[in-house]
Length: 302
Image (cartoon, rainbow, N blue to C red; front, side, top):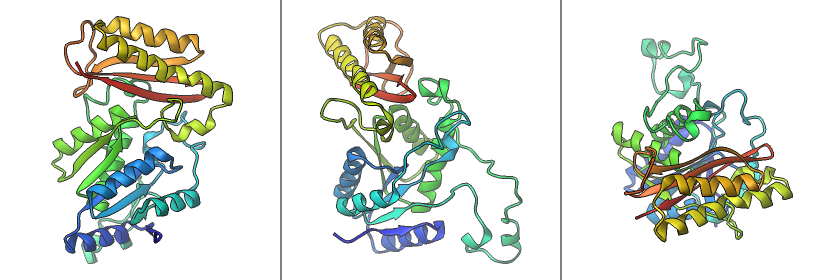
């Protein structure tokens, strides 16, 4: 398997994509923040099965981290990621140094028009907000997160110009935010979400798992176990959302987890279901074990 082409400049990435599109090929994009695990590689393999050419982006997006969050400690291993992507068959990897600043040399514009585009030192000002979907769940405790996600994904879409984009549904709210942004802004892109990929013991795969101590990792299994129990309970007839949330909270709390939220929400609009469940829902969890914040979810279709 040949190694993927690696691009750091936006203009070169765009030119490569346009060349392949001119050849009549379809492109799939898998956006990531690196430190790749099997869940990411499943996204890549799925992309390869659906499109002629697969591009993987690796960019730890500072726009989605608040000052108090773990940007500085986010794990990275670019050399290891490139080896994994080569084995998975990715065709290109886009790993820019910074997506929030551009210079005139990055744009095919000359003369007076180019002078208007020079960086005046004021920094990035343009943000995309998906106003309703970003408010609940993770948006309550991470108020800048989804504007950063939506903005950087829109930038990636504009640079790579894919036909398809593949995301994991572990980040369920993120997936719905991107789907809504694509619909509302008329991106000609099909967004595909894949089910949560789990370790053999049920823990949802995440780049942050490496930071869990052995003790905290064992305790973190309470998230998946509680979600599984809630789903079984609902399928057996328990339709009261309060009862399902209580079940999940109790199991996680007893394991020593610090709960950010446990919510039962509609799958499309992510609106809370306050009483009886009468539509497809997703039970979403965010909880910390030690200093590691984990998210997970389970869909319940009734």
